[in-house]
Length: 85
Ligand SMILES: [Zn+2]
Image 1 (cartoon, helix red, strand yellow):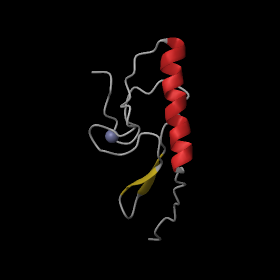
Image 2 (spheres, protein in one colour):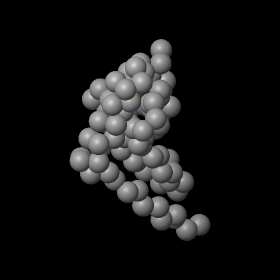
Image 3 (tube, helix red, strand yellow):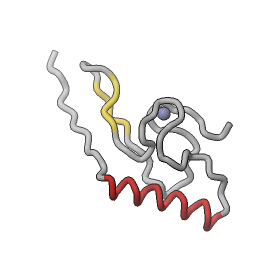
Image 4 (spheres, helix red, strand yellow):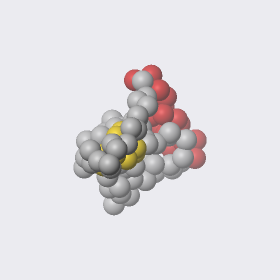
């Protein structure tokens, strides 16, 4: 079995900051509740909710894309922890 060659494209700190700013803007403009952690770090897995990660196993890698911040974040895209409760 060939190992799948998947590359994850990481966002730069500037891009991450932009996603975070877009999310904060959304909360302010639409008076949405601020579910997502302000630090951008998931409470459970500690990953950045706006960053892209390579998850899964060595043989079955899986790309987990971070949030773009343009829609309301209600949970971690990586470990699927809900931020609503
Ligand atoms: Zn998480």
